[in-house]
Image (cartoon, rainbow over all chains, first blue to last red; front, side, top):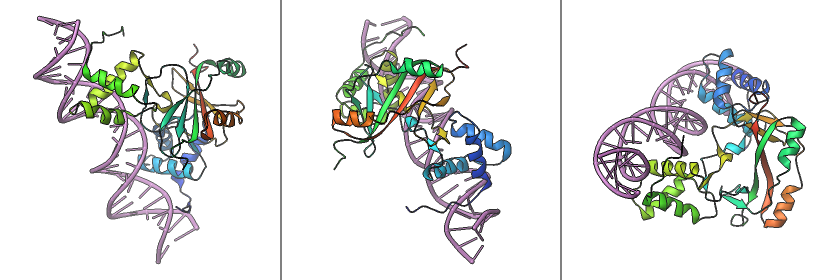
Length: 129
Length: 129
DNA sequence: TTAGGTGCAAAACCTTTGCCATCCC
DNA sequence: GGGATGGCAAAGGTTTTGCACCTAA
């Protein structure tokens, strides 16, 4: 519950270094491969444990767009989502979809952008107490 | 590759009915539990197979916000992401974060909104050929 | 000294797949 | 009949966890 004291370890330092060396958002698997170049016998458990510790300590971010099992929906229109932080349920939102933002960001970045996904977070009506 | 012919089956019909009965975005596990009330001996494999078939047929959507393994990032500022449709890599974007949109959507929906995640899709510079 | 950290391996989860019987067209 | 579909179970990929041994403070 309370902040556990984080001790130094070369494994954690190496993991952090690898993460800071890239501008992409690697998977645990990729981090493991990279760190093994420096610490050949590091284990997967250690990588996962440290990613979790670093995340809890606020030193890194886990891409929460990729959280939990797949979810399915019969609504095939383009739309946005809301995910409740407490119960985890996901609902459709009836908000207008911003069709220009793809072009704006494409112009700014030079990337070839075909779409976007937007998910809001908070408490749903049931969980609001 | 070509559209396989979709034949009728009571299992697939039941799965679709369950999905259409809810406004949330259930997991395969939840769908399985619901469908079992009607078809007690349906199997998990059938649920997954049909979710995939229905998705490929465009009848339902898989929430692609929850795709693939977790990804980690040392950038803890609030920021948006770009995911390449071809190579799958994820990058940070240096676009301004819209801080007002949470309030706007909260006002429209009555939900308690604390944040949002925005991810753009397309082809990265390396994959653009 | 000692609580936190590691390596290893097993387990837990979620999803896919192979096999063969069954059903629909 | 023959290809699509289903049930079952095994396998696959990702993440977590228990345990005995280390190590930083």
